[in-house]
Image 1: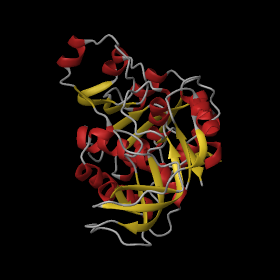
Image 2 (image 1 turned 45 degrees about the vertical axis):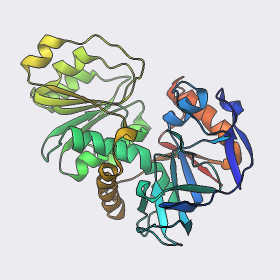
Image 3 (image 1 turned 180 degrees about the horizontal axis):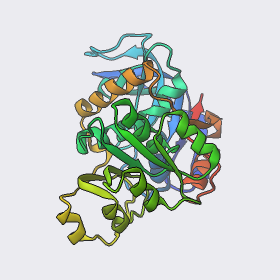
Amino acid sequence: MKAAFLDAPGAPDVLRFGDLPTPTPKTGEILIRVASAALNPIDTYIRAGVVKMTLPLPFVTGSDVAGAVEAIGPGVKRFKVGDRVWGSNQGLLGRQGTCAEFVCACEDFFYPTPAGVSDDDAAAVALVGITAHLGLFQRAQLQAGETVFVNGGTGGVGSMVAQMAKAVGAKAIATVGSPEKAKLCQSWGVDCVLNYTTDDIPARIKDFTAGQGVNVWYETQREPDFFKMVDLMARRGRMIVMAGRQAQPTFPVGPFYVKDLSLHGFAMFNASTDEQRVCADDINSWLAAKKLHVPIGRTFNLAEAALAHQYLEENTLQKAGTLTGKVVLRP
């Protein structure tokens, strides 16, 4: 099979495109013919060696995938040959990745793709959708009528947070960096869209919440400003952090505890397969009902994996501002 792989961590150009043996499914595994693979920042960190993980070499990059079941191993119960599926959690913790013509993985990491949902959308929603859901519902216990704030309303996780909040009857506030991105957020029904280049964000949040503050603050930035966050939180609000591995910001303990606030940190790949399936069930329902729209900013051929990694790094690390949504690769 053709695959994008590396023999040692490094810059994007360590990724090679070539032939590797097609894997054979073992007990509990399914072999998927890949239609779409989506790229996430974690994929670039693992490729670069910034996130230290033991990698099977040669190592195929990529966490997210959608396609059709090509073969099944002994004991597989949830899928049959020909089923369309999507999933995440590959390309890390010793597992081979998804940027290949075929992926072989445990069936517990995969979910049926709803009729009418494209493979591009199914792959692009995977990691970011599950991450958003875990933070909003498992950790923050978001309820209808509450107000959610998220930075980067058209980004991978941010777009999912804003739309999921609306799907359950909550109010959503999101920041964007351009009028075009603001229009996209508004098309999803986001209640308050703020331009971080021109708006006074704290003042606008206080105005929108009538001074009561935000119930759930979903922080996607790598260097959170906890002083600002705590000041803008409602009493008994919940703050979510899921980015910034090297961040060590100052924390306002006093203002935090007198508001009865709580702070939740998590990494998506630490969640069990049962916990993630709860997320996937909701995601599938919202995708099928067209309550969840997956912004895809750019697609590449699988042979262009190194270029795709470079493009994503330009936007996540260097803030190029040329990407709205997810990066997708197709064999």
